[in-house]
Image (spheres, rainbow, N blue to C red):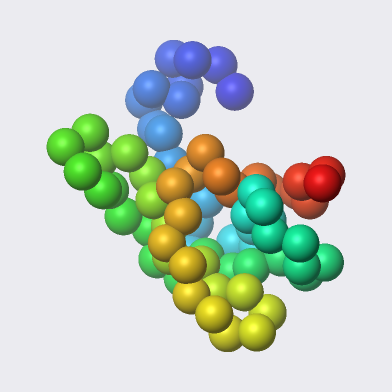
Length: 70
């Protein structure tokens, strides 16, 4: 994605999207259940739920739309 496009709309994921979390060794993706800005800069964060029902709050930098190699 081009820098100008990213600056205009930094949000990469929507509620319901399947995502993979860095450092998570599960073979299945998690689902985005909420997106929100966090802190003064309002950098995108997401609340995700894994396949076991555990919720995590994760900054966008640690999420991917495809599996992350170990």
